[in-house]
Structures are given as structure tokens and as C-alpha cells.
Length: 609
Image (cartoon, rainbow, N blue to C red):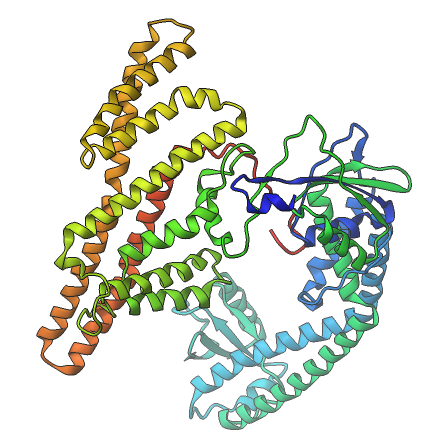
């Protein structure tokens, strides 16, 4: 297994079988999931549904409790029990704790909600009082009311129009910051009728508290005092709820239920008996050491072994690359997952991708910005880890091209200035592209060897490889042209042999040969775009510098240079990334990678999608 780490072949996941006590089953599966190295797959005709008849019914009880009280439960620090027992026992125990908590907490919850509602009313009252200003209206008299006179404060949606108020009602309309208010005073019957009309207009009455003072300023002072009282009361109630959460161990109960819900979602059936359960599947932990350590740390009763996989099951393939190569797995995943007999090109891309990116984006300063961006955002956006080697390569080519933040007059070029020698800049990537294409053709031959089809590859693809080499060498070694007709005859004889001597296959063979040769030629010329984008980057940098120089003012010069570099980093960074991806996928991978393997999909632990 360890030797596979240094091979270009992908690694098949390892089959595991685990026997655990049935009472420990949920904790066992939870432990396996948290390793991020397990994909469950049941292989037994005795697999039976795990759910007891009333388990989902009891979960509905939990859902009803959660609908009412989950706003008062802990969410971020759930600590499921270490040995929860059977699923039904775990759920029963957790529900019992929730019900006991509810019985003690419900009066506190109701008082908190009452205080919260009063605080909302106070906020509206404050808005009304601020809109009242210096009005001579005696609010204390309105709050008191009487048997022959009723006073109401109505909160109305903005721009509400009341068609006509009863003639016997005194009213005053006030505009607050977010609402409109209507103060109405009149006979109780008429005020009640007005309330019905305003309700249809989505208005609502807000009772005036009895502690209102005569003027708005005094009332605001009373309001703030009441606000403070409610705030202190809410804090005291929250402290009591916190103590109840600890008393009834809500974090453990809710953690157990969350784990059960996750378990029922991800595990449908397993081979189970009265006391034991089998958990089977695939793991990317090829040595098994991490799984063993996780199970031992949790303390579950489990026996883990790694037999040969069942014959009728194909293992998923895993990328088993060192940490420095793992960011480049992204490219292979775009086409799928390499099968057992396909090459995993990840470690080759560690060199290929940064070289192409840096060549097209050669600048010390801009490369440093990309490098720092990759370092800062790698954890939040893992794909941006590619900016770290890409930025370093850009800095290296920046030294070769003598470019620092678009300026080519600050340091001497260790190799050349792209715009001064454009032909060289175009030819070098072509040579690199030829090497990459030859590497892809050779990997195709290696895959044929792995599959036991080396003879077929030798009869056809080896002839095509020889033809490509002869065409490439002819401009430099004229005698190499003699290899072209030899490779043609080689290819046709191979087709004839594979066609069992039927001469009718030769016509199709010539068509395929022509198509393949033209495709290789196009693929080779495609790498000229690496040099073309290097020239475009140099030209855009020169344009930014010239524009800054023409500005004539030092501050304006600096602003233009800064903005120009920002545009280059963002715009060209995206364009160059797309071009590198295109060359890797459609020029290099097309030669050997088909992505026919099954991807390893680890079981997500609770709390993860």
C-alpha cells in the first residue's frame, strides 16, 4: 500500500468490515464519519431496516417541541453522549430530558415572550412620542380614559388613508420614522367601530400604558425607565434558562437527537441482529491506522478488519497524493475520477500548471499579490490554494522578464523583455507544449501496459507517436522525414492485423490517421497561446505605465499605476487561469485520461451537508 503513494496510478479505496454492539451503532457510524475517510456500502442479503416502528413517531414529538422552544435551546455547543445506547433508548432518554426542561422552563419562556412583546410596544410608543414633539396634548388623561370616554392609539402602515372618521371622534395624526399613528378620543362605541375599520386597513390598536406623564418629554423618561426594568428582567430570566439548560443537560440531549436524525438520513439498512450490527464500506485510510485510533478514542465496542472486497463490487478510487500536490487534484476532478488503469496526473501538474501560469503572468509584484491572496483565502476557498504556486511562478518569471508591478525599468531582465523578443516568447511555449503532448502519449502507453493491452498500443499508437516525432524532427534533421512513411506503413499493418487481414479497414485507417495527425498539429499550435498571452500581459503593462507617465502629476501617476495593476491582476488572472485549465484538459488530458473511475464520496459527519 505504501508504494502506491509514489505511483502515477490512482489508489482503490480499501474495503472494511466492522462488527459493533447494536447499542453503540449510532456512535460507531458517527465516529467513522468524523474521520472523513469512510464511504458506507452495504453488502449482505441480511441487511434489514434499522428503524424501530415508533422511532419516527417519537422524532415527531421532538419536532413539535423544537418548533415551540428551539429558540431557547443551545445550538453551537452540542455534545452528544459518548455511549448513547440503542437508537430508541437514546431518543427516549433525550426526550425525557427535554420534557423535564419544558415543564420548568415554560413559565420563564412565556414571561420572556411577554417582556419581548412589551419592548416592541415601547419601541412604537417611543417613535410616537418623538413625533409628538411639543404638542400640548395631555397624555396622562388619555391613558386614564373613563366610562364615557375612550382613547386609543392606532399604529398604521405608511401612507394609510382613512376615508372618513366619525364626527364624534377627536383625532390627531402623527408621523413617526417608520410608522404613522392615529390618536383617537371619543365615545367607546364609536372608537370600537373605528378600530374595526382600521383593522381592515392593517392598522392595529396599541393600548396606552397607565404610567404616561402629561407631556412627551416626561413620558419618554418613564418609557426609558420601563425599558430598563424589562431589560433587567429579561437578563434574569435568561440566566435562569441557562441554569436549566445545564441542569437538564440539553446540549447532550440535543446532540444525541441531532446524531440520530443524521444517522437515519444517511444509513438506511445494515445487517443487524439482536445484539450486533455490521458496518461495511470503503475507506481512503489505506493503512487503517486512523480508523483504529478514532474508534479507540471514542471507546465504542467494535472489531475492525480489512478483508478483500466482494468480487461483485468495484472500489471507488481515491487521490492519494502528498499535501503539496493535493490542490492540483482539482483539474483531474473536472473530467471525473481516474480508473484503476488510468494515470493520475496530479503530481505532473505541480510543475506544468505553475509554469504555464507564471509564463503568461510574469510579474514580481503582481505574482506576490496572487501568492498572498492564496495564503489568506486558502482555507475559506480551497481552490484558491492554486494561487500560491501560481503566484510564486509569476514572481520567478517576473525576474526573468524584469517586470515589477508592470514596470520593466526597475530591475534588469535575467532573460529577456517579452516585447523586445516576441518570436522567442512564442516559440518557447511551443517546445514546452510538445513535451507535454509527448508525455500524454507516453502515459497512454503506460496505461496500455497496466491494462495488458501493450501489444495493441504498439501496433497503432506507437506508430502514431513515431510519426509525430518524425514530423517534429524533420525541420532540424531532414533525414527524420524518412521515418514518416515507415510509421505510416507500421500503422496500416497494425490496423490490418487488428482487422484480421480485411483490406477494407485500410480506408478507415487512413482517415483516422489524417484526423489524428491534424488534431496533434492543432494541439501543438494551441500552446502558442501561452506565449501570446505573455505578450498581451507585457503589452497591457506597458500601456498602463505609459498612461501613468502621460498623466503628468505624481499623485495621478500613482493612482493610474495602482488601478492599472488591480485591473491586470483581476482580469488577466481570470483569463490566464481559464487558458491554463483549457490547455490541461483539452490538449494534455485528452491523450490519456477518460475519468471512468468511481469517485470516493466520504460520509459527511453530523452538521455537514
